[in-house]
Image (cartoon, rainbow, N blue to C red):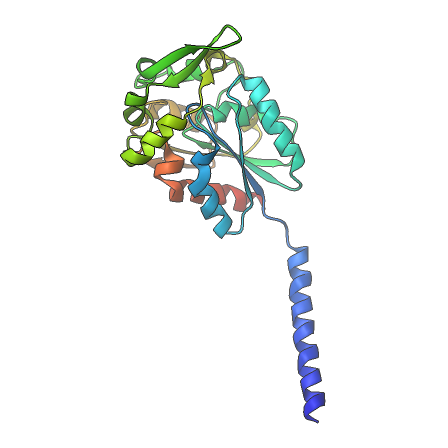
Length: 262
C-alpha cells in the first residue's frame, strides 16, 4: 500500500510539474534588450545594466557601435536585430540615439525605443544641430581631433577633461579608465542628417540628467515632449554617463519599456 501511495504522489507531482512547464511554454517571451553605446564610450559601458537585466530574467546584447556614420552604424545594429528571434527593445545612449532611431526602421520586431541621454532626431536633423539647439553643451571645447585614414577627422575627448565633460558623477578611478578606453567618433557622423524618425510610430522612453554637458537638459526636454515619450525620467545632478552612474534607474526604465511590449 505504501508503494502504491508513493507512486500516486509521484504521478501527481509530475502532473503539476508538467502543467507548469506547459504554462511556461505558452507564455510570451520577454523582449531581448539590444543596447547601443554612443561616442566616446564602448560596449562595456553597459556592464552594470546588463547584469541587472540578467538578474531580472532578460537577455541583453551590447552592440559594438562602429561610430563611423549614422547610416552604416544603423546597418550594423540592424544586422544584430535580424539575428534575434522575438521582440526587441532598442536602447541607445547619446549618439546611439540616432543609430537606434534609424536601425528600427524596417524591423517589425522592434517594439520600443529607450533613449538614455540620447538624441532622438527628426528627419534631416543631426546630433550636431540638436546639441546646439539650446545653450549648455561644452563638448566642443573638450574635443581633441585626430586625422583619420580616410581623410576626415576622428574626435576624442581630451583625457584631462573627460570626467568633467562626460562622467562627473562617476568615481575618478573609473572615469580615468573610461577616458583611456574611449572610442572616437567620425566627425562627419555627428553632422550626418537622420532618416525616417521611427519614434513617431514606436513608443519611446527617455532618461537624462540635469547636469549633462554633452546634451543639455533643455535639448532632452524638447525631444522628450516632441516624441510624446511614454515615460521620462529626469535625474537631478546626473552627468551624461547615466548607464554607469545610475544603472538602477536606467535598468528600471528599460524594464518598463520591455514589460509594456510583452
